[in-house]
Image 1: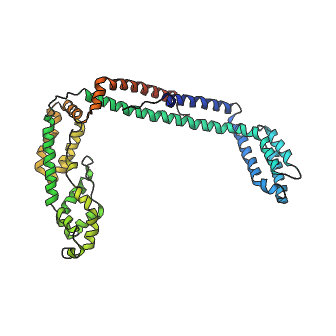
Image 2 (image 1 turned 60 degrees about the horizontal axis):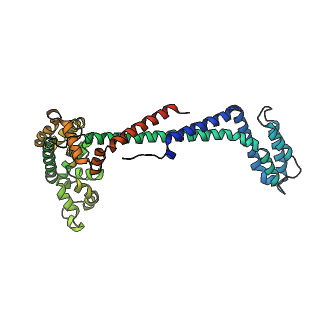
Image 3 (image 1 turned 90 degrees about the horizontal axis):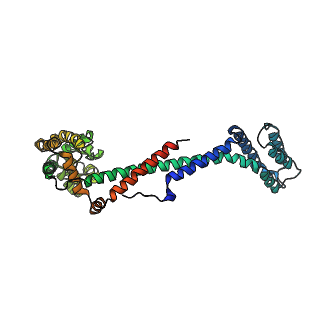
Length: 376
Protein backbone atom coordinates (compact mmCIF):
# COMPACT_ATOMS: atom_id res chain seq x y z
CA UNK A 1 0.00 0.00 0.00
CA UNK A 2 1.55 3.30 -1.04
CA UNK A 3 0.83 6.46 0.93
CA UNK A 4 3.56 8.75 -0.36
CA UNK A 5 3.15 12.51 -0.29
CA UNK A 6 4.70 15.13 -2.53
CA UNK A 7 7.01 17.70 -0.96
CA UNK A 8 4.42 20.43 -1.55
CA UNK A 9 1.86 18.46 0.46
CA UNK A 10 4.22 17.61 3.33
CA UNK A 11 2.11 18.18 6.47
CA UNK A 12 5.12 18.80 8.72
CA UNK A 13 6.35 21.61 6.47
CA UNK A 14 2.83 23.05 6.39
CA UNK A 15 2.67 22.92 10.18
CA UNK A 16 6.05 24.61 10.50
CA UNK A 17 4.93 27.42 8.19
CA UNK A 18 1.65 27.78 10.07
CA UNK A 19 3.54 27.97 13.36
CA UNK A 20 5.77 30.74 11.98
CA UNK A 21 2.75 32.68 10.72
CA UNK A 22 0.98 32.30 14.06
CA UNK A 23 4.04 33.53 15.93
CA UNK A 24 4.25 36.57 13.66
CA UNK A 25 0.54 37.30 14.15
CA UNK A 26 0.88 36.96 17.92
CA UNK A 27 3.82 39.35 17.94
CA UNK A 28 1.82 41.88 15.90
CA UNK A 29 -0.91 41.79 18.55
CA UNK A 30 1.60 41.99 21.39
CA UNK A 31 3.15 45.08 19.81
CA UNK A 32 0.07 47.13 20.81
CA UNK A 33 -1.33 44.89 23.52
CA UNK A 34 -4.32 42.57 23.53
CA UNK A 35 -6.48 44.73 25.79
CA UNK A 36 -5.83 47.95 23.85
CA UNK A 37 -6.57 46.30 20.52
CA UNK A 38 -9.81 44.79 21.81
CA UNK A 39 -10.84 48.17 23.17
CA UNK A 40 -10.15 49.67 19.76
CA UNK A 41 -12.00 46.84 17.99
CA UNK A 42 -15.11 47.39 20.13
CA UNK A 43 -15.04 51.12 19.41
CA UNK A 44 -14.49 50.57 15.69
CA UNK A 45 -17.36 48.08 15.49
CA UNK A 46 -19.72 50.46 17.30
CA UNK A 47 -18.69 53.49 15.21
CA UNK A 48 -18.98 51.73 11.87
CA UNK A 49 -22.32 50.40 13.03
CA UNK A 50 -23.51 53.98 13.53
CA UNK A 51 -22.27 54.89 10.05
CA UNK A 52 -24.08 51.96 8.51
CA UNK A 53 -27.39 52.67 10.24
CA UNK A 54 -27.50 56.38 9.45
CA UNK A 55 -25.81 56.65 6.04
CA UNK A 56 -28.98 56.45 3.99
CA UNK A 57 -31.28 58.70 6.07
CA UNK A 58 -28.51 61.25 6.77
CA UNK A 59 -27.38 61.86 3.19
CA UNK A 60 -28.88 64.00 0.41
CA UNK A 61 -32.49 64.97 0.99
CA UNK A 62 -33.01 62.36 3.66
CA UNK A 63 -34.68 62.63 7.04
CA UNK A 64 -33.47 65.88 8.64
CA UNK A 65 -34.36 64.66 12.11
CA UNK A 66 -32.25 61.55 11.50
CA UNK A 67 -29.43 63.76 10.20
CA UNK A 68 -29.36 65.77 13.44
CA UNK A 69 -29.68 62.59 15.50
CA UNK A 70 -26.76 61.05 13.60
CA UNK A 71 -24.40 64.00 14.18
CA UNK A 72 -25.31 63.98 17.86
CA UNK A 73 -24.63 60.24 18.13
CA UNK A 74 -21.23 60.65 16.46
CA UNK A 75 -20.24 63.60 18.61
CA UNK A 76 -21.29 61.87 21.85
CA UNK A 77 -19.54 58.66 20.82
CA UNK A 78 -16.22 60.42 20.21
CA UNK A 79 -16.46 62.50 23.37
CA UNK A 80 -16.98 59.37 25.46
CA UNK A 81 -14.01 57.51 23.97
CA UNK A 82 -11.22 56.84 26.51
CA UNK A 83 -8.48 59.43 26.24
CA UNK A 84 -5.81 56.78 25.86
CA UNK A 85 -7.57 54.67 23.20
CA UNK A 86 -5.39 53.83 20.22
CA UNK A 87 -5.79 56.18 17.21
CA UNK A 88 -8.30 58.38 18.98
CA UNK A 89 -7.42 61.11 16.50
CA UNK A 90 -8.88 59.06 13.63
CA UNK A 91 -12.27 59.08 15.32
CA UNK A 92 -11.95 62.79 16.13
CA UNK A 93 -11.11 63.61 12.50
CA UNK A 94 -14.07 61.55 11.37
CA UNK A 95 -16.34 63.45 13.74
CA UNK A 96 -15.02 66.79 12.45
CA UNK A 97 -15.69 65.75 8.87
CA UNK A 98 -19.23 64.59 9.64
CA UNK A 99 -20.27 67.79 11.44
CA UNK A 100 -21.29 69.53 8.18
CA UNK A 101 -24.59 71.08 7.21
CA UNK A 102 -25.02 68.55 4.43
CA UNK A 103 -23.58 65.06 3.90
CA UNK A 104 -23.25 62.85 0.85
CA UNK A 105 -22.24 59.29 0.27
CA UNK A 106 -18.74 60.51 -0.58
CA UNK A 107 -18.45 61.96 2.93
CA UNK A 108 -19.13 58.55 4.42
CA UNK A 109 -16.58 57.02 2.03
CA UNK A 110 -14.06 59.65 3.16
CA UNK A 111 -14.67 58.85 6.81
CA UNK A 112 -14.21 55.15 6.22
CA UNK A 113 -10.93 55.95 4.51
CA UNK A 114 -9.92 58.05 7.54
CA UNK A 115 -10.66 55.01 9.70
CA UNK A 116 -8.55 52.62 7.58
CA UNK A 117 -5.59 52.80 10.02
CA UNK A 118 -8.02 51.72 12.76
CA UNK A 119 -9.27 48.87 10.59
CA UNK A 120 -5.68 47.79 9.95
CA UNK A 121 -4.93 47.63 13.68
CA UNK A 122 -8.16 45.83 14.48
CA UNK A 123 -7.37 43.31 11.72
CA UNK A 124 -4.37 42.18 13.76
CA UNK A 125 -6.76 40.40 16.09
CA UNK A 126 -8.65 38.63 13.30
CA UNK A 127 -5.37 37.86 11.54
CA UNK A 128 -4.14 36.17 14.70
CA UNK A 129 -7.34 34.12 14.99
CA UNK A 130 -7.08 33.14 11.33
CA UNK A 131 -3.46 32.14 11.89
CA UNK A 132 -4.43 30.11 14.95
CA UNK A 133 -7.17 28.34 12.97
CA UNK A 134 -4.71 27.57 10.19
CA UNK A 135 -2.23 26.28 12.76
CA UNK A 136 -4.84 23.94 14.25
CA UNK A 137 -5.81 22.74 10.76
CA UNK A 138 -2.16 22.03 10.07
CA UNK A 139 -1.84 20.09 13.33
CA UNK A 140 -4.93 18.08 12.41
CA UNK A 141 -3.39 17.26 9.02
CA UNK A 142 -0.31 15.96 10.82
CA UNK A 143 -2.46 13.89 13.19
CA UNK A 144 -4.49 12.50 10.30
CA UNK A 145 -1.35 11.68 8.36
CA UNK A 146 0.18 10.02 11.43
CA UNK A 147 -2.92 7.83 11.74
CA UNK A 148 -2.68 6.90 8.04
CA UNK A 149 1.02 6.06 8.39
CA UNK A 150 0.43 3.94 11.49
CA UNK A 151 -2.28 2.01 9.67
CA UNK A 152 0.06 1.58 6.71
CA UNK A 153 2.80 0.29 9.02
CA UNK A 154 0.37 -2.19 10.58
CA UNK A 155 -0.54 -3.46 7.10
CA UNK A 156 3.09 -3.71 6.01
CA UNK A 157 4.15 -5.47 9.20
CA UNK A 158 1.31 -7.91 8.78
CA UNK A 159 2.29 -8.44 5.15
CA UNK A 160 5.89 -8.98 6.17
CA UNK A 161 4.83 -11.44 8.85
CA UNK A 162 2.74 -13.37 6.34
CA UNK A 163 5.65 -13.31 3.94
CA UNK A 164 7.71 -15.12 6.53
CA UNK A 165 5.11 -17.86 6.98
CA UNK A 166 5.97 -21.41 6.04
CA UNK A 167 3.73 -22.17 3.08
CA UNK A 168 4.60 -25.87 3.37
CA UNK A 169 3.33 -26.12 6.96
CA UNK A 170 0.65 -28.79 7.58
CA UNK A 171 -2.29 -26.40 7.78
CA UNK A 172 -4.67 -29.32 7.37
CA UNK A 173 -4.09 -29.90 11.08
CA UNK A 174 -6.25 -26.82 11.60
CA UNK A 175 -8.37 -27.02 8.48
CA UNK A 176 -9.83 -30.46 9.07
CA UNK A 177 -11.33 -29.81 12.55
CA UNK A 178 -12.54 -26.35 11.55
CA UNK A 179 -14.20 -27.54 8.34
CA UNK A 180 -15.70 -30.54 10.12
CA UNK A 181 -17.31 -28.31 12.73
CA UNK A 182 -18.42 -25.67 10.21
CA UNK A 183 -20.08 -28.30 8.03
CA UNK A 184 -21.82 -29.99 10.95
CA UNK A 185 -23.14 -26.78 12.50
CA UNK A 186 -24.33 -25.46 9.13
CA UNK A 187 -26.22 -28.67 8.44
CA UNK A 188 -27.64 -28.68 11.96
CA UNK A 189 -28.92 -25.13 11.64
CA UNK A 190 -30.46 -25.89 8.25
CA UNK A 191 -32.30 -28.83 9.80
CA UNK A 192 -33.34 -26.70 12.78
CA UNK A 193 -34.73 -24.00 10.48
CA UNK A 194 -36.62 -26.53 8.38
CA UNK A 195 -38.10 -28.62 11.17
CA UNK A 196 -38.53 -26.47 14.28
CA UNK A 197 -41.38 -24.04 14.61
CA UNK A 198 -40.80 -20.49 13.43
CA UNK A 199 -41.54 -19.45 17.02
CA UNK A 200 -38.71 -21.64 18.34
CA UNK A 201 -36.23 -20.48 15.68
CA UNK A 202 -36.93 -16.78 16.22
CA UNK A 203 -36.80 -17.22 19.97
CA UNK A 204 -33.39 -18.85 19.54
CA UNK A 205 -32.20 -15.97 17.36
CA UNK A 206 -33.52 -13.43 19.83
CA UNK A 207 -31.55 -15.06 22.64
CA UNK A 208 -28.27 -14.92 20.70
CA UNK A 209 -28.30 -11.12 21.02
CA UNK A 210 -26.29 -11.47 24.27
CA UNK A 211 -23.47 -13.16 22.35
CA UNK A 212 -21.72 -10.47 20.26
CA UNK A 213 -19.33 -12.98 18.68
CA UNK A 214 -22.27 -14.90 17.21
CA UNK A 215 -23.51 -12.22 14.80
CA UNK A 216 -27.03 -13.26 13.89
CA UNK A 217 -29.27 -10.44 12.73
CA UNK A 218 -32.04 -10.19 15.35
CA UNK A 219 -35.57 -10.98 14.17
CA UNK A 220 -37.68 -7.95 13.16
CA UNK A 221 -39.98 -6.93 16.01
CA UNK A 222 -43.23 -7.22 14.02
CA UNK A 223 -42.32 -10.69 12.75
CA UNK A 224 -41.32 -11.90 16.23
CA UNK A 225 -44.55 -10.54 17.72
CA UNK A 226 -46.66 -12.28 15.06
CA UNK A 227 -45.13 -15.75 15.41
CA UNK A 228 -45.30 -15.48 19.22
CA UNK A 229 -48.99 -14.64 19.28
CA UNK A 230 -50.60 -16.27 16.21
CA UNK A 231 -51.17 -19.98 15.45
CA UNK A 232 -49.03 -19.96 12.23
CA UNK A 233 -46.03 -19.35 14.50
CA UNK A 234 -46.09 -23.05 15.35
CA UNK A 235 -45.35 -23.92 11.73
CA UNK A 236 -41.83 -24.18 10.34
CA UNK A 237 -40.21 -21.30 8.51
CA UNK A 238 -40.48 -23.04 5.09
CA UNK A 239 -44.20 -23.56 5.74
CA UNK A 240 -44.64 -19.91 6.75
CA UNK A 241 -42.86 -18.76 3.61
CA UNK A 242 -45.07 -20.99 1.49
CA UNK A 243 -48.18 -19.54 3.11
CA UNK A 244 -46.90 -16.00 2.55
CA UNK A 245 -46.95 -16.71 -1.18
CA UNK A 246 -50.60 -17.86 -1.14
CA UNK A 247 -53.26 -15.70 -2.73
CA UNK A 248 -55.58 -13.89 -0.35
CA UNK A 249 -58.48 -16.20 -1.18
CA UNK A 250 -56.39 -19.33 -0.56
CA UNK A 251 -54.94 -17.91 2.65
CA UNK A 252 -58.47 -17.40 3.99
CA UNK A 253 -58.75 -21.21 4.27
CA UNK A 254 -55.64 -21.54 6.46
CA UNK A 255 -55.52 -18.59 8.88
CA UNK A 256 -58.02 -16.43 10.73
CA UNK A 257 -56.20 -13.17 9.96
CA UNK A 258 -54.66 -13.28 6.46
CA UNK A 259 -53.82 -9.57 6.54
CA UNK A 260 -51.71 -9.98 9.68
CA UNK A 261 -49.74 -12.84 8.14
CA UNK A 262 -49.20 -10.91 4.91
CA UNK A 263 -48.12 -7.81 6.81
CA UNK A 264 -45.79 -9.52 9.30
CA UNK A 265 -44.44 -12.48 7.34
CA UNK A 266 -44.85 -11.41 3.73
CA UNK A 267 -42.77 -8.27 4.25
CA UNK A 268 -39.96 -10.23 5.95
CA UNK A 269 -39.49 -13.03 3.45
CA UNK A 270 -35.99 -11.89 2.53
CA UNK A 271 -34.90 -12.05 6.18
CA UNK A 272 -36.35 -15.52 6.65
CA UNK A 273 -34.95 -16.92 3.40
CA UNK A 274 -31.44 -15.64 4.13
CA UNK A 275 -31.24 -17.18 7.59
CA UNK A 276 -28.42 -19.71 7.62
CA UNK A 277 -25.76 -21.09 9.94
CA UNK A 278 -22.90 -18.86 8.75
CA UNK A 279 -22.79 -16.80 12.00
CA UNK A 280 -22.18 -20.09 13.85
CA UNK A 281 -19.13 -21.07 11.82
CA UNK A 282 -15.46 -20.46 12.68
CA UNK A 283 -14.44 -19.87 9.05
CA UNK A 284 -11.18 -20.25 7.22
CA UNK A 285 -8.56 -19.07 7.92
CA UNK A 286 -9.51 -19.28 11.60
CA UNK A 287 -9.19 -16.26 13.91
CA UNK A 288 -6.25 -15.54 16.19
CA UNK A 289 -5.93 -17.84 19.20
CA UNK A 290 -7.36 -15.44 21.80
CA UNK A 291 -10.31 -14.53 19.59
CA UNK A 292 -10.91 -18.22 18.85
CA UNK A 293 -11.03 -18.98 22.58
CA UNK A 294 -13.71 -16.36 23.28
CA UNK A 295 -15.65 -17.21 20.14
CA UNK A 296 -15.72 -20.91 20.97
CA UNK A 297 -17.03 -20.12 24.45
CA UNK A 298 -19.95 -18.16 23.03
CA UNK A 299 -20.57 -20.67 20.25
CA UNK A 300 -20.70 -23.50 22.79
CA UNK A 301 -23.48 -21.75 24.70
CA UNK A 302 -25.42 -21.00 21.51
CA UNK A 303 -24.98 -24.29 19.62
CA UNK A 304 -25.85 -26.27 22.73
CA UNK A 305 -29.37 -24.79 22.55
CA UNK A 306 -30.35 -26.49 19.29
CA UNK A 307 -27.61 -29.01 18.37
CA UNK A 308 -25.77 -30.31 21.47
CA UNK A 309 -24.28 -33.19 19.50
CA UNK A 310 -22.26 -30.69 17.41
CA UNK A 311 -20.56 -29.22 20.48
CA UNK A 312 -18.08 -32.10 20.51
CA UNK A 313 -16.75 -30.97 17.10
CA UNK A 314 -16.55 -27.40 18.38
CA UNK A 315 -14.49 -28.50 21.38
CA UNK A 316 -12.01 -30.10 19.01
CA UNK A 317 -11.60 -26.67 17.40
CA UNK A 318 -11.30 -24.98 20.78
CA UNK A 319 -8.41 -27.30 21.73
CA UNK A 320 -6.33 -26.45 18.65
CA UNK A 321 -4.30 -23.60 20.24
CA UNK A 322 -3.30 -25.97 23.06
CA UNK A 323 -2.64 -29.04 20.94
CA UNK A 324 -0.93 -27.54 17.87
CA UNK A 325 1.58 -24.87 16.90
CA UNK A 326 -1.51 -22.77 16.30
CA UNK A 327 0.02 -19.37 15.63
CA UNK A 328 2.55 -20.73 13.13
CA UNK A 329 -0.03 -22.86 11.34
CA UNK A 330 -2.55 -20.03 11.29
CA UNK A 331 0.01 -17.59 9.82
CA UNK A 332 0.66 -20.14 7.10
CA UNK A 333 -3.05 -20.57 6.47
CA UNK A 334 -3.64 -16.80 6.31
CA UNK A 335 -0.65 -16.32 3.99
CA UNK A 336 -1.84 -19.11 1.75
CA UNK A 337 -5.37 -17.70 1.59
CA UNK A 338 -4.69 -13.96 1.44
CA UNK A 339 -1.32 -13.18 -0.15
CA UNK A 340 -1.72 -12.06 -3.75
CA UNK A 341 0.88 -12.63 -6.44
CA UNK A 342 1.67 -8.91 -6.42
CA UNK A 343 2.26 -8.95 -2.66
CA UNK A 344 4.51 -11.99 -2.97
CA UNK A 345 6.53 -10.17 -5.64
CA UNK A 346 6.85 -7.07 -3.43
CA UNK A 347 8.02 -9.21 -0.54
CA UNK A 348 10.55 -11.05 -2.68
CA UNK A 349 11.95 -7.86 -4.22
CA UNK A 350 12.37 -6.14 -0.85
CA UNK A 351 9.87 -3.40 -1.73
CA UNK A 352 7.83 -4.12 1.40
CA UNK A 353 10.87 -3.83 3.67
CA UNK A 354 11.94 -0.59 1.98
CA UNK A 355 8.49 0.98 2.30
CA UNK A 356 8.21 -0.15 5.90
CA UNK A 357 11.49 1.57 6.76
CA UNK A 358 10.32 4.74 5.00
CA UNK A 359 7.00 4.76 6.80
CA UNK A 360 8.62 4.20 10.17
CA UNK A 361 10.87 7.21 9.57
CA UNK A 362 7.84 9.26 8.56
CA UNK A 363 5.97 8.13 11.67
CA UNK A 364 8.79 9.40 13.88
CA UNK A 365 8.97 12.71 12.00
CA UNK A 366 5.23 13.27 12.33
CA UNK A 367 5.17 12.34 16.02
CA UNK A 368 8.12 14.64 16.71
CA UNK A 369 6.34 17.49 14.93
CA UNK A 370 3.26 17.07 17.11
CA UNK A 371 5.47 17.11 20.21
CA UNK A 372 7.30 20.22 19.00
CA UNK A 373 4.19 22.14 17.96
CA UNK A 374 1.64 21.75 20.73
CA UNK A 375 -1.84 23.21 20.91
CA UNK A 376 -1.89 27.00 21.19
